[in-house]
Length: 579
Ligand SMILES: Cc1cc2nc3c(=O)[nH]c(=O)nc-3n(C[C@H](O)[C@H](O)[C@H](O)COP(=O)(O)OP(=O)(O)OC[C@H]3O[C@@H](n4cnc5c(N)ncnc54)[C@H](O)[C@@H]3O)c2cc1C
View (cartoon, rainbow, N blue to C red):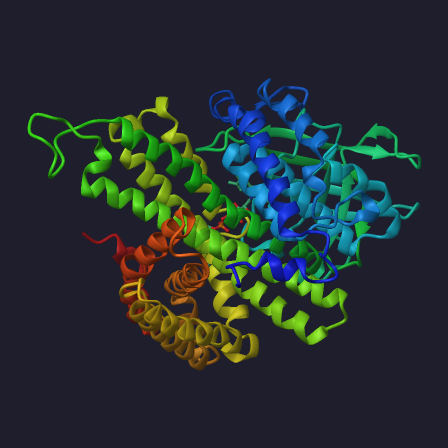
């Protein structure tokens, strides 16, 4: 039987044959214990103590962070998905995502350090020279050295093409990097021996915009031929940001002052190469929406069973009921549970598609590889955009379940709400994800990749009808597929002629398509589990709720998608302030 993300099929490929589901399950059970015992207890320190910048440019983390991070390094979990030639285990990405899910639920701020490291590993592995790979990858795979991603500058946020950091060639083939980068996650810290910065900069005479950007590897400490750490490079953290959440993740202003760096890949290929890292990171940031929702939900569920208020309908007179017995509280909890299942289905299917593409490529089947890569590429903006938006909504609901105790810091519900907020902003804001969806991903085979998926969901809706236990899910899925198809066809038709309207439809389209994809995948899951056992009963009830009660909420988005941008521009900015 085919499960949602189909680990069995991944393990059946030659490339990932060693990742049989039984082994993976054993490893993940062990990882779960590790995260619960070692990492989760550090979460509160991260929030209340946070990162501290010192006058000498050093940054310290709470005392509990380094021991937990050191144990993470010793565990070897960070190396699971990477190339065995550099110390990895060559496991599929989907297993790394599962490890990352537990790490991020345990401590999102701390998880950002391995997240950025992973992305940097990927970029160096794909685009770096053999010498660069040999120098950096083994220590980065273990986590002894960490990685960063340096795109953002004060004038270059969403518009990465505006980057102005300079790279001047040096006689020995290296480059002198000068400029200021802002918002650099884990740009400086005290939990590892070296930090490998990947920095976007311009070489002399480069063309303007993204075409003129190159990528450089700039280590905090220069590395000798024997791998030993040498001189301190001129890459300094000049301050860190004070921010709404993820206080345990240092967000650094980095100053590069003729820092020594080396070109990664070709000159002017930096933007393309950074995308290797960004795609990877976008999936991981989408995962954050899921992880923080899961943690917030677990806490809300427990609180709702302990807190008593009022008498629920049907409870004996004179008693007070746990708030979970009130239908409105129950709705909040069931909604969280259903969305968490939906997000997990989306994220793991995305990771699975990446693995299937890798496996097909390794087997020399280019057509199959392209098919899976197209699916993965389509799902990336959905995973990132939808799951991080929903992460904000679900952490808000979890807080609401706590009533006033959610608003005060004591319960920790507020931390989840604050921590979740960033995920919709970094790694390309969700507005940029929506633009990517309609401008690039929708265009793949003129909408063909989307319609193929919708066709699959249409057939699945019919299977839901014949299942007998799924209520109106089949009917609602068919309706959502019809809306998503109408929206897709409309956008493909108007894309070339009316780019402004295409972009004005982008966010509602992402919501409609993303929610439909979650429902289509949950349907797959509901149809694949045994209807009788405890797991199956829970999965099917959750999927049915999603299909019957959450999915229909996006039907109202179609008018916003098919409308042109006119209504958004009817008022001049000054008129928007008119009261
Ligand atoms: C805590 C934190 C950690 C970060 N970590 C890193 C990091 O490690 N490395 C790094 O390089 N950067 C990092 N960033 C930067 C982050 O990626 C940027 O903040 C983000 O890309 C948005 O850029 P901006 O802040 O300049 O916002 P702006 O680009 O000014 O955007 C403002 C608003 O305008 C919208 N907008 C802008 N342009 C468009 C467009 N073309 N179409 C539609 N909407 C648009 C945006 O969606 C947003 O709503 C981090 C930021 C934070 C806050």
